[in-house]
Image (cartoon, rainbow, N blue to C red):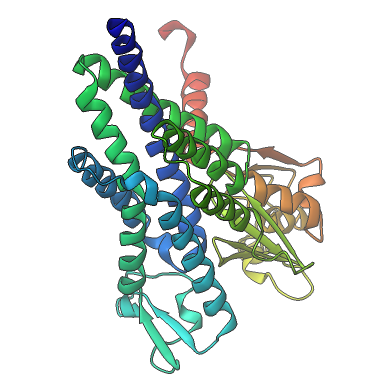
Length: 368
């Protein structure tokens, strides 16, 4: 009977190695994306969240033989981190006298777009980005101590180290693939954190630590994340692409709370998009017949090329959400024109495929 019980216990620890491996990598990616989107200017330093996750997990492994149970603190630390993020987001956007100082913008070779709108020299109150990054580094690291402690205890209890590492790596790879699939499906953060909180709740239940207050903290965390920050506004249209938080207000598109591009009509602006065509015309050349646009975005380059008589445009854009905004809302509907060929992929991959196809096309058949 004891042998059967021991065998079941070993299987349970093996399952824990897989689950924690999945949970750490899945939650790490969720934290990198969510905190980078809402903590002002943290998107320039995403390694802060990455390093914090692994530091917290490593500290948890070191604390595996301690009596204290760090996993029980996860719901409260995670909820505190999310509330702190929302509070800072609200203060920054409501109080125009607050400036975030990012590198003091002293070097012309290093530009952080979006920081130029508020000058720390004339702001009522300036906070260095190092202070903000430091606070969230500590909070994110503390979140991961609990899962790391469970991981360390499972490794200690599992007799076969090679199989144990294999289970843990398998769980980690599954977490990465699972999160990638959700990202490409444009799933919102509520789905990411629902999966993460379900995993934490399972581990707490297994350890007889799923107390009512912890359940409430996890539920509050999910509710806060599920409510869009612009839910009171009818002007915003928000979506999560595989890469950013994308927000549209009329013709303006922002990504991760920083201005990204604007769908511009010919009558008011957009001369920059026409410049290359005007130079070609005034130098006596014919209109461009075939145009390749790398990073077509919402369609401004396409619209101007069509206006100047281009016959074919290959429009390459990696972000499906931004592209869809251009299809639906651009004032001149450039994506709907039959001369525009829409290509949804990374520009690097497209260029590699184009190069290979060109080499293949011009290689004599006798050399193949």
